[in-house]
Length: 296
Image (cartoon, rainbow, N blue to C red):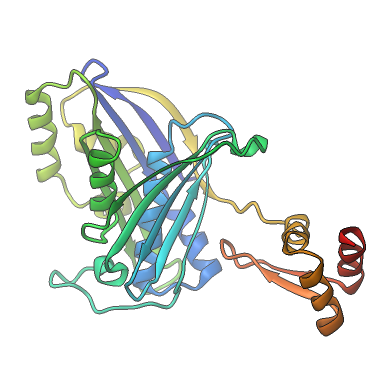
């Protein structure tokens, strides 16, 4: 079971969120047939969304959206308060050579563009309040760097973000996926900040630790060292899509009578694929006729 924990440290002046999402990322790969670099990009973004959305209120929704000019074309990851995650990349087969360190060149695949964070209050209740949308220019495309830059510039919270995805050559292909978010809250002193920075700089690679069996609690220990952690919450995280046949019909109805009638007359039906999970919904001639009748 993939898990996420969150809490505070140093007399509530540091917020820490840690997650292991190996199975979640593997589920996404299985559905989308992603290339290795696309897997790394989407996996990091999914975990980043889970970390950032860890303390959002019930019925809210948080989305990280990357619009870029690299081969991957863009990334979307969505997190709900109950731990459900879903996402996609625009070009699932995008691949670039490894970087100079022999690692996935996620930055090269992403390219330049904009990094967005969208917070929707009461979304699950159908309130559709005006969302809060923050954005910053992409800095490196490595996802973690860009999330940290966003938090510092758009939300004025100094943060350290560690995100990683480790792949192997045999199934299941995702060997490890997870991340840690450390945020300095008002009152954090320079000594604590220096201690955490030093601990992180000497910590082993995130995915190596996860591949060795570490859970979120061990990840927190890895970044905080001797600083005491107070756990405030824990939950399961998982891949889960919200698409359905009913929503497919609603989307067709939203296109209007003319488009629905054209589908009915020319194709005698319709097919709609979900970008988040790949599910294919077939809309019958009778269902289209009913939509046209209602709209007319």
